[in-house]
Length: 155
Image 1 (cartoon, rainbow, N blue to C red):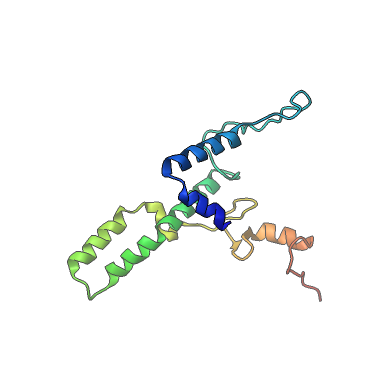
Image 2: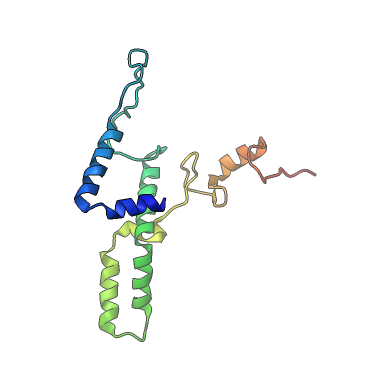
């Protein structure tokens, strides 16, 4: 391994880039093996209106997913700005600038706009946080012993 690294380090930048480009081209070329016997596999994903990595139940789940991404992206900045805004030791000008920057953040980046939803039905009310299921789905799965760690009451 060390000899490989030393060989790479000794190569000039132009030689290294030409070698890597040749290597990439050779890796990207597909050489069919027994091309007459292989069958074509449909690897094309059907087109959608918008591209998402996950499959969602409905539009509310899509909206919740986008909000969670925004909250995750802006949470550290928001916490720092809120701490600056609430700090009474700092001058008022700095606090006002911090409040303006908080107002400039996207509205959906605030954590209070998140709503827990059932992952099976997208129901927003009475969601058991630990299982991420609504009470209806939780009861249905618990009755038929489909959930680990849940024991139906017996007396």
